Length: 86
Image (tube, rainbow, N blue to C red; front, side, top):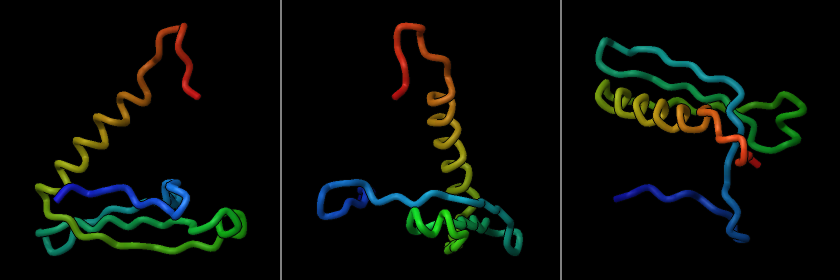
């Protein structure tokens, strides 16, 4: 089943800024991804953070890394001079 983006009642995306990222192997079998994030703008300013730890298989991690790299490469690519990112 495809994943869908979470939205609030006003149809705005629900997103949390990631403030720190960690990756570590576990028992030579899996990879743990640790995401530290701020849940609100106030939490971002005050330094209050939450954390989630997600476990990925090695194939999942490779797929995830490949997708991240593809999307980041597109976002970092120079745009033609007549187009701007807003």
